[in-house]
Image 1 (tube, rainbow, N blue to C red):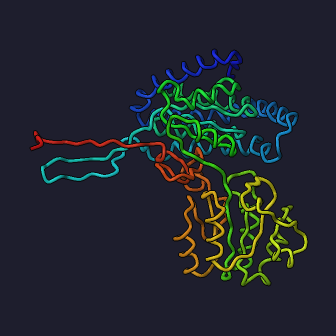
Image 2: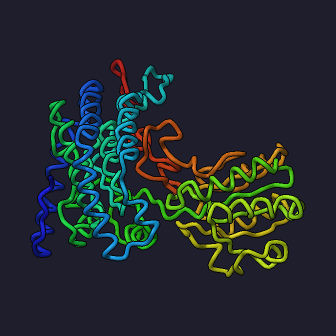
Image 3: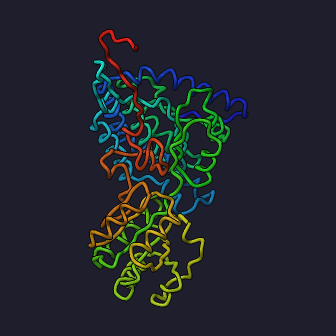
Amino acid sequence: MLKLHEKSRDDTAALMADIGRRARAAARPLAIATTAAKNVALAAMAEAIIRREQDILDANAIDISNGRESGLSASSMDRLKLDPARIHAMADGIREIAELSDPVGDVIAAWDRPNGLNIERVRTPLGVVGVIYESRPNVTADAGALCLKAGNPVILRGGSDSLNSSAAIHACLIEGLKAAGLPQDAIQLVPTTDRTAVGEMLKGLGGNLDVIIPRGGRSLVERVQNEARVPVFAHLEGICHLYVDRSADLDMAVKIAVNAKMRRTGVCGAAETLLIDRAVASTHLVPILDALRAAGCEIHADAEVLKLFFDASPATDADWITEYLDAIIAVKLVDGVAGAIEHVETYSSHHTEAIIAEDAQAVECFFSEIDSAILLHNASTQFADGGEFGMGAEIGIATGKMHARGPVGVEQLTSFKYRVRGSGQVRP
C-alpha cells in the first residue's frame, strides 16, 4: 500500500521534483521496451487486480465512508464506487490494451524524394505524462496501462477522495512492472493530498513532465489550462446533446434517450440536453419524456415543452450550459436539424452529440456542421468511451483540437519522429 506523505509545502515540492526525476530516468528504458515485455507487465497487472480484489474493495470502502462524511455528491459517489463488476472491467480493460498493436515504432508514412532520400514518419512515445484526476479510481488502472503500452512513464495524481482505492490499484500495477522487469518508476502515484503537488506538476517538474491530462470537473480543468506550463490534453466537460429528428423511429428514440441519460448519469458521455424536432412534438415528445420520468429522470423543459408535458420544471438559461452528472435532463423543441445544429453550436462543450434519424440528408448535415469530438447516429451518447471504440480504455475524451481529440488511447499518447536514409547525399 502507498505510504502517505503529509509534510510541508517545501517537502511536497521536493517530493514532486524527485518523482519527476525518477519518471524521466524511466523514460528511455520504457521507450525501448519490447512489446512482449510490456504485454507481460499488462497481463500481470490484470491478474494482480483480480487476485487483490478484496484489498481493492476494502480500500474503496474507506474512501466511500470518507466520501459520505464529507458530503460528496451522488454523481461523485457513483464515480468513486468500486464493486466486483467494475474491478473485473478494469482488469478486462488492461487485457484489451495488451492485445492492441504496439504503436511505438509504427511507420505512419514513408516516401522517397527525387534525390534518393527515403523518409519515414515513425511513432514515438510522448515522454513523461502527468494525469490529474478526481474521484474515479479506475483511471489509475486505465492511465497506467495505456501509458505503459505507449512507452510513456506516467505520474498519477488522483483525488484525495479516492486515494486509498487508487493506492490499492497502483500496487497491482507495480506488481506487473516487476514481473516484466520494467522500471517501477514507470508508473508513479503521487502519495499526498497536498494541493501543492498539483501546482508542481503544472510547473512541469523541472522540465521532466512533457504533457498533462486533466480528468475532472470544470474547476480542475480550467486551473490546469490556465496555469500549466506544459501542453495539456483538455477534457473540459460533457454537455452532450441528443437530437430526435422528425424522421426518427419512435421506439428507437425512446430506447436511446433513456439509455443516453440514465444508464450512468455520472459519466461524461451522459446526455444532458434533449432536442426534439418541433415537427414531431405531438407524436414523439410525450412518449420519450414519459419513459425518462419512469426511469427516475427529472425534466427541465422550455415553455413549449411544458405546454405538452406537465411533469416538468421550467428550464432556465443555465440549464443549457449545465453538466448535471445526475438524473436531470434539459428538453427543448427546435426547428428541424438546422435548429438542433444552431443550439448545439451555441451551447455544446464539443464533447459528444447524437442524432436519431432515418433521413440520410439530416444525418449528413448534422455530421458535417457540428464541430464536436464525437458524433453518433442512432446510438446512445454513452458509447463515447475508449473501451467502446476498441481502444481497451481511455485516459479521457479530449475536446480540444491540437494533437489528440476524442478518446485518448495508445495512439493518441504517441508523437512521431522522422527517419531519413540516404546514400551520401549532400545539399547543393
